[in-house]
Image (tube, rainbow, N blue to C red; front, side, top):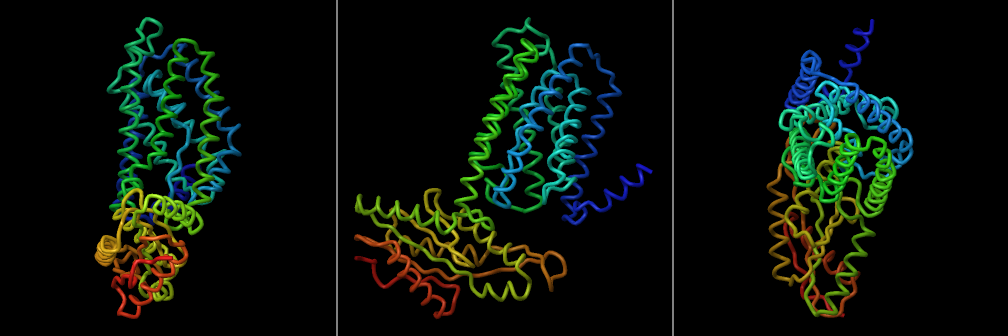
Length: 428
């Protein structure tokens, strides 16, 4: 009976609707992790009472943390921008399990950890699918396998006999292995799902990586505590809660400043940043340019293929803009199918060159969409018109935007898929 229920559940997994390459990869990783768990228990590695006590303490700490922090985690999910990465804190408990526990117990702990996460927290969250949790758990098991293979438990888990230098070296190497294996397995499935994309979409942003290393550092402290002073591991809990509140604050700031569909700045945040840059440019007497980029015949895409296809087009174009422009250029979505970019220290001629490069890149980019009137996933190309305006004197932001918008209007009436420069630098 249980097997029939499980089979029926797996048949309805959203995984089977994913591209074939994604399905093959996920199933391969899941089967590899499952095989490793079976092998680890058949190996019958020597397990001591101390190992069992460490496992019990880790389970107690992780369950306590997850139960107490459920509401905070719910708020993080609530305010998270769609499509952005979500960094959890499970590495604080999974890392010490990989370092100090025998292979079978480490794998068992990962299974228990993610089963508790699914049952108590993630099952009720919209958008989180069981096959994703299963894949994440499989990644955790394979990380434990990599750490156990490369770092036999001969130093840290052996107790106080290991010197401080040896312990630090083992921990540093374990953090490196943990991070590399995790990044490789997660980035691979993201790449297979989305195709080539910005590095931040595949490997995470700088903020994501800093948060990940912070959790691994707390995991290292937990590992040392389990071996040297077990009761001290309880002191890690307040630090994990503070780290989670910091992550919540980061997510709130991101939700308040980022556009959910494109992950660019929203109109309000862009205006604030652009105004500060114009003030700086006026003080330093430097040139500044604004680009207004508008998708050509975007309404036809929405009307013909549906708004989901339109959202995919917007996101793809946003990735092109973020990839082509400099890190310190302010790029945002101004509404509808219109984007805006402010280019510091850029005169009119250079801005026109940048705009033409953007136009060509957008025209050459294939967008993979699926929607109504489309048989499965289809590739399409889109174009954009660009208006450019620059300032060399005291200029109000609205005046600069108005000039760029007038240039965009000329580009639209000049045949679309073209760049137009405002007649002259905008002055007061």
